[in-house]
Image 1 (tube, rainbow, N blue to C red):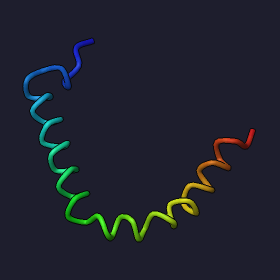
Image 2: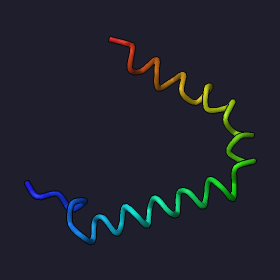
Image 3: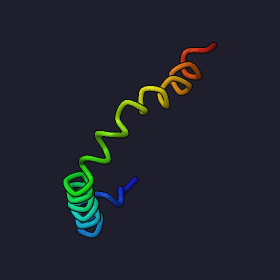
Image 4: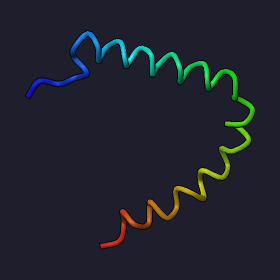
Length: 53
């Protein structure tokens, strides 16, 4: 099956998404690092759901 992401439009979309992500991380770096400890608590239920039979 032909993937959209390998077309010129898909590569342009990936570049745009990458650039937007880079600038969001650079501009909001303090907010991201302040929220980082809470990601551990948010990851616990997901980990437990994955490990349960």
